[in-house]
Length: 429
Image (cartoon, one colour):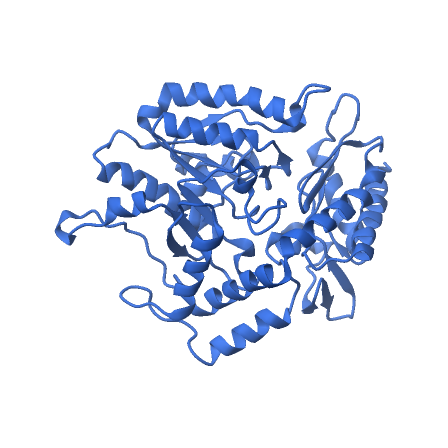
């Protein structure tokens, strides 16, 4: 907060497409999709029109004992487009809440099935799942977690498949497969007391955009089945086309027991999340009231009509405009614009999965010694980029590109050029 005494907050007057404009007329290219939520640009005409229509019909209604058309249609669409077997949809209102729902539902499932010893969760190092207490507990980024550690439930943390640490010449697939042995050991040792493994598929976004191979997901799905443990996939940041497929799980051809969705679900317009799960899980809660097996979780704005309508409009854009195929071409262009960073003396790695590209700054390229975090080199890149009209918001010393899917080749080139200049500015002393 104190930073803003010398670097004031920027009030935004309006947004149009990929651009934001402040009250002084300065424009900023939104290269991070306003924290990864905005898929098709600000003030998107199709989503705007859908919301205006919904606003004249129904803005919100209690979602207990009532329902409405947009919530039903969106649930049906989500069942249609998510991996096979995810036939049930539970709404919440943000990503952290979706994770809380999945954790509670998994625990409660085993309780209803008489396996009351299952009370724990397995998570990966460097993972991030949100900042409410349950979500924070199953995350592992110290910056967010350490302060609140006394408030959090105990979890089992397994070293991850993050391919940044692979040996020279080792492929992503070989490294991720090798690292899975540690997960296998944890499941073998703890499965009797574990409800679920929770994982961000392919990219640990808040964990410095670290990436790994889909083979890890395939091995994990098989192991969870073998050890009678649920698999929760957090596709909040990586879902809806970010990794090159509609959902990251598709690249391993797996279906989880729970899939958490939010962020891009409404195209960046309104808070909404959904947890998709199986008929088997649903049936564990379906019983007479007096048996007290019902799932207990509610939010005032669950199934909000405006948010659901924005979600429907967003999915329509995907389906009508063949976005996944178009993104393959955009991802290739983005890779080409970033070729300039591969041999940079302060860049340890340039990595990419679909429409996510990350550049890891280090003090020493050969030893990968990081810059001291206190020097805040990434902040300098952020400040420089804003002065040149580009919104980049690094994660520590990792600069990443995660633009809306309407970005053009010229705009991708501008992002890369400003990032290159910003890096030079940040490392000059």
